[in-house]
Image (spheres, rainbow, N blue to C red):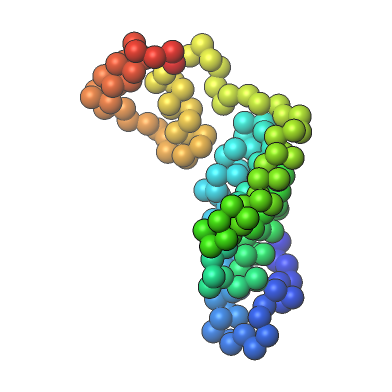
Length: 154
């Protein structure tokens, strides 16, 4: 991620300590986004909307930093949500963004062919989404997979 001038988001009179912390947050965004769900969701070929939960103690700079990072990662929209303190009114903009994204064309696809085994599907998901590979499925876990497969439509 490229360095950006975020000084316009910094509260007036920000101390050097907080300015440094702010810079660290900015520099650490790449690592944060590596595990972010929006990147994973984009892999399925669908528009992604990120809800940035904003709390009373959050500064505008912090919230905007996260919102912009989501957009840079490829999100269709990134909306500040304050439903925890404003109730439904605090989620209206988020709901509107989700509706708008849902109305756009998508190219949904699975990460794997549908005709492969459950074990292979789990391995692909672990490798591609969780970045945990090689996968070591224990016998007991595999028994649960068989039980689920025999009693569902997966």
